[in-house]
Amino acid sequence: MSAPRPPLPTGVHRTAGPDATEALAARLAAALVPGDVVLLVGELGAGKTTFVRGAARALGVSDPVTSLTYTIGRRYEGRVSVSHLDLYRLGDLADEDPALLADYVGPDRIAFVEWPEMGEPELEGLGRIAARVRLAHAGGDEREIEIA
Image (cartoon, rainbow, N blue to C red):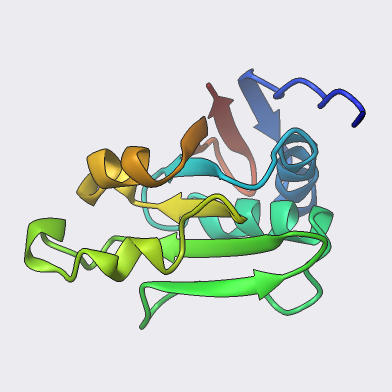
């Protein structure tokens, strides 16, 4: 019998810099299991990739987790498989190969999706939406992060 999962750190949090944002993401990661999908929303530079980096590190990923400037996604191996997607450049998933998301989202991995608005219905069909994370600038390096 496996140990019970820690609860998601839901609510509104304020972080004082990238290290604190990554630490909050690590707390969220502790409550995730393969098949979970985390949706990340926030304007450019709000800290979405920083959040994913903190979660991925907590899940055992040692490879660098960087912004997905010129690609839709990356897969990483840690204690579990982790996918990081950025749907910002997609106009509409109806114009894309149906297998596009299936390469990154599924029962054997945890997926973090930036700019999910372009594919939320498709994402819900591939995995369990475990959390919705909204990141916002709060002055300087501070961020307001809402986890629901």
